[in-house]
Length: 255
Image 1 (cartoon, rainbow, N blue to C red):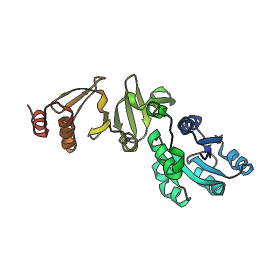
Image 2 (cartoon, rainbow, N blue to C red):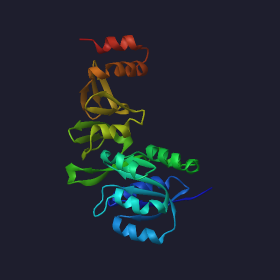
Image 3 (tube, rainbow, N blue to C red):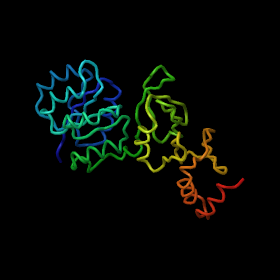
Image 4 (cartoon, one colour):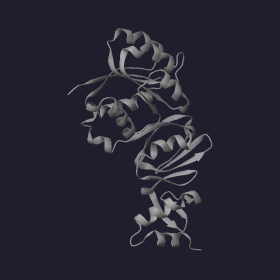
């Protein structure tokens, strides 16, 4: 089995640690170097032979990942940008990147990307991948402390202008990100659904449903939006014993 060498360049240590956690679950993908200083990375990489993969953040001090990529592109077979910002997509394409990962990305998104680049690398992922899915974000409620969020503990995510409020089983986390951006990650999982414009909920944590009001296990309540009505009716019909969509509609419309 081939072993693929990997370099990570990101000015945020927590992002590197998160990537290493994912990479540890792929037996034949190996991190040989990681850098938080992009300028040091630029000089040090010249002393290293060609590698299979460079994972490169874009928004970094002194030199951006886009600028750095032009200097290191010839040192790697595959180049993947990792960033929390969507506006760099075209520049990443111009830089001849092989893929673009939008933070925070899930393990399933990461492994899907690696599988496309190195099909042989994903033949045996550790079973831990099923239970260890998480990501890191900066929590505005804790002076931008970096906190870990387990997907299975998310009750709901609420859009608040340029931020999202993540309600978990144990805490609330306010982080700078749009609801649309985080929905691209969460909606990959079948247990996350959207029945209201400003919320994404985990159906595993629904406590009760009263007409068109959904109440979550943490006491949070939300009303089903008109646009999502059909999706909600279909969901209810599929989960409620001895009820079809017509009966679900009647329940939703009760006074």
